[in-house]
Figure 1 (cartoon, helix red, strand yellow):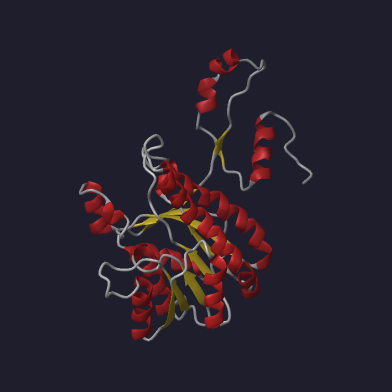
Figure 2 (cartoon, rainbow, N blue to C red; figure 1 turned 180 degrees about the vertical axis):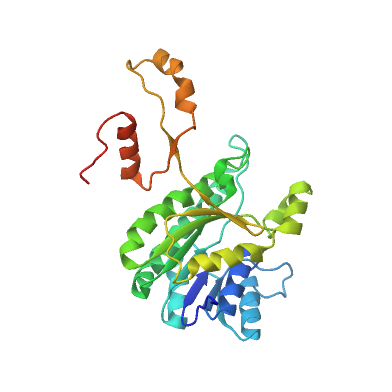
Length: 302
């Protein structure tokens, strides 16, 4: 059965190109009214803003879309424009982001701040402003954009920190939204976009260009956003026709009888052992895992 989005309103940030554009086009093709947000302006002073280009593309194909050019840090204005136009809001895809910062010791501090602010504070600002409308929807959907950079990479501290923050944010908001029918998930997308096109020529850039179109990620994200998809508090690695669950895991760990550095040196192999992993669902569940691995009663009255 085709997954339709008739009578749904979706807001996609950073939708003037790449992944955001692919999300907007696919949602509109399936009946959603789409707010296309982006600050980017194509090179050339006579060119219209990229968000308007995408919105016009949707309308030319028979869909319904408007463009928005607010900074994501101004979440209230962005959301107000969406609600003024369509009267409701059901889906928020926080896709806007920038890559910058550089190495810790030589990188530009202002670039670090901008990178973290756009992804983390921008996603918070937009989602906070949208939250009352997502509650009113009864089945609101939110997608946060993380990255494989969450695993870390030299020279990408700001970007890695910003993208890793999406895991904790999405899981916490998923817990808050559960009673209201809101589902919140994060994705780690891999695709050939205006961001990855900045990569130097390499085997990786060639592979992304050949095998990782934005549309491959968009299909999965659209599934996540559908009202019949009840998955929540998850993170997925998505790209090239593959999707996989990404988890926060904790090993059983090592135990010491004496609280000394020497005692920990003796059991360091056990501390690092990944043979048996737990995947706590939230902060309290992680405490239960700790207690159970101390050999104590893991029940908590919370």
